[in-house]
Image (cartoon, rainbow, N blue to C red; front, side, top):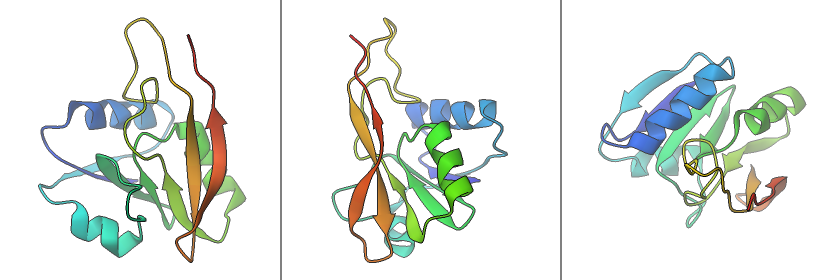
Length: 125
């Protein structure tokens, strides 16, 4: 897995740690401008986050849990990748000290750029 991120992004580093703990070999590439990469791999407008990864021919945008990435690789859908827009509290790398988490949906990005729900993650009060 190659992760493209800003050198100063702490939550991106925590997501990298999450992926490594899940068994992924991760190469980090720090860059100041991720927009050309996001355009190249096909991240839909408005679905961006703070880092973009490439793995097994797919892109992973944002704080997507490792279990969702493993499912994507195992199922091999005809798609561009997964997106988790924004930075939801409680997602990997965005954990709260008290364990709270907001509900969020990881979306699958089709070859045409359309998105559908891939995985639902419940809120933790």
